[in-house]
Image (tube, rainbow, N blue to C red; front, top):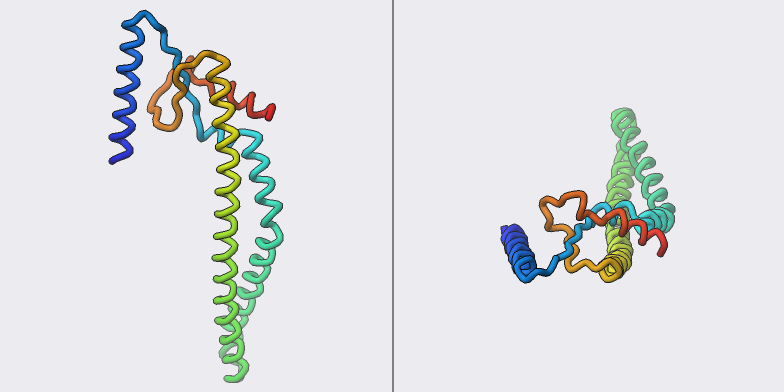
Length: 170
């Protein structure tokens, strides 16, 4: 609810600013950027996805291989447990339980490492996007460029495509 209140306050402030600027005979140039689209479609985002996939591919494959082997042993226990000797069954159950714990720890560490790397990539990408938006606004005489909190914007004020084109040159 606080975010909606802030968005409403910002919107009212912008309307007052536009109204005041229009009253003084000044035209206010406003642009809108779809940040979600910039983040998903920019070349920086594509590079980040590729880097992340390459960086974590080996660990992901190792976890998937271990998960598959664990499932096979669990299936074997389920299928053959009743005909196994008690010692053999207990040994298999203990091994499965130990491997499950180890796999959960590895998966948790993997998830944490991926999240940290994604955050670093996102911070770097956000910095590039912000710099391009700022330069675009300066170069094209925009007074305001709005982002995420816009509920509606006409296509005439959407500058997302132009920003994406400039991101491609970086």
